[in-house]
Length: 196
Image (cartoon, rainbow, N blue to C red; front, side, top):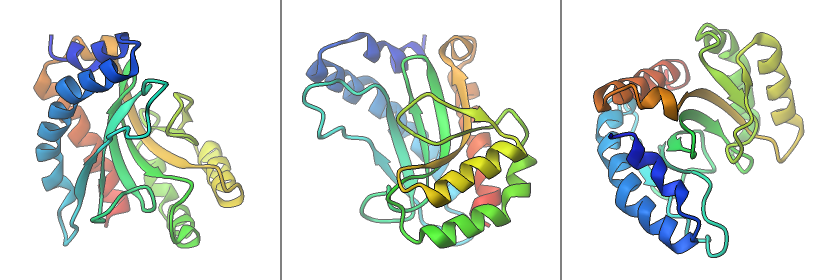
């Protein structure tokens, strides 16, 4: 089954072997999926690039998740708003991510305040998070949005993420095209708000 190749890599406990499996089984999917996502992102003069996570500093603990990021920068993505598609051992996720070391943080926060009502219209199939390296999340509500944004504004180590995820069990009931559609529609919904 297609989706199993995205998750079976996390059954391997050895760091080098897991990294090898990620490169063999997951990264080619990210490359293929990126071909589908790029036309959605590269509209209205935008120029996004794909960055597949390399986990170059992983030597002891195997990565708990892996992803591909899309950003409008030639070198790296963590300092600017970016989109991420990735997998944990039990889910596939799609984020619009604003991380801790982002540049022009004040301007970004201002835009997040301006776009709040538009993001809230996405409904509670979307979720929020303050850390891309945990599975913690909260419902997309007005209160949660304001609280998370306040934390992002006042705490240097806070992050702001908005997106969707789908469980491994649900993915097993979907074919490859349905999974691609889920990713594309999620990114389309986010980019129509953020990139316009």
